[in-house]
Image (cartoon, rainbow, N blue to C red):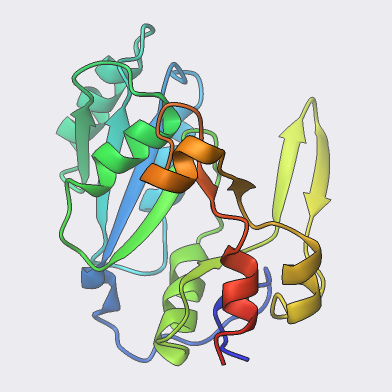
Length: 202
């Protein structure tokens, strides 16, 4: 079976062999009306142990002062490149807009309320180096609300065939999406045959 998905555990991962791999990574941070959190999120991205990565922060026409905060932070740190959508696109449209702004081969897609461990990009990059044929890397996460943290993780180091057959990585697309591709107006999705195709890929 092809090693198509890797779950990078919080205390597990591969050591980065190429110290310049950060030059291949663009962090695309999506935001909308999260002025109260965006600075903390960006701080966790700026503190990454990996270096050389690009930071694109795409504001989806926020109606609070998110954009003003981004401009202030970018003036203080040239690593931050804030951009703004021409009109509100929703999360999938904002993701497409942000990704289109870079030509780097690896995209780290993050959201305005993500607080990242300092070694997150380093672990992801190490996995990509070790397994060049994988499609994407992700990890367990915790959700902190009112001082309570829920942790969600998936069994094992890999998403094995049983997991792929019993679960969907993405929401299945409807008829229109299946015909025309990702439905940027309604959400992120993939065809129901995707998991089976990975399972039978060899």
